[in-house]
Amino acid sequence: RSIRPDIVYADLTGFGPSGPYSHRRAYDTVIQAQSGLAASQTGLNDEQPKFLRQLVCDKVTAYTACQAITAALFARSRGAGGQHLELSMLDACIAFLFVDGAEHEVILEGDYSGPQSVAANNTPLAFDGGFAAVAVPTDKEFHGLARAMGVDSSDPELATVRDRTANREKAMAFHRAVRENATRLTVSEAEALLEANQVPFGIVRAVNEIQNDPQVIANGIFSEFDHPAAGRVRHHRPPTRFHGTPTELREPAAPTLGQHSDEILAETGRADRIDELRTAGVVG
Image (cartoon, rainbow, N blue to C red; front, top):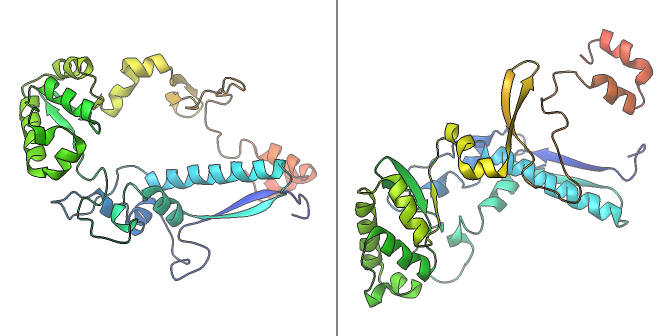
């Protein structure tokens, strides 16, 4: 800070700067376990914790850090000066989990016996030749699903969300009938019926199918280019389009090790020591 008093710098740790776990090394699955995320993946009849099969805690922490740094830079632009930011992976992922994934721990009074997470029992519908996710939180969407899947929903005890909550067994029987009828439809047939009845849905795509999805193509999120080490690669653009300050992949290939060492050393006032530092093996 003696060089740049208004510097904004973030200090990231696994568990926190102090406390009984502060000395521990942390990786994504370690934090998935410790934050409650792995346990929250269980359903009502499944007590085996599960890890998300991606580095979700690493990415959540990175997004949270970017958000915090951006907020601090904005505060600096308003005259607040520089500041030190502290963020742990554990805190970032606990905040990510609440409140939708840990409902029992939010309302501390009363007896709540429903699922711990609003998404606790979400599973895809199985069709002939594929799967789809269907979401029907509103009455209109619920009855649209009934029409699409050919299941009767005229029972007054299924009329509204309140009715279905009060008559859980009938609601569960309805969804079992939906799943049974779904297996008789091909994915394309189901897609047409769900679309016609305005039911929110998403076809389950394999990762290697995503780039050929018509909506993904329309969004233009992917591009291909030549990487100096890996050859031909596919990568996504920045997901947000800034219409006032457009973004682009100026350097589509990830930098190779040491590619920008000279530029960084020059920016930090060490241009006259580049050869010395390279000879000493400090930089590549």
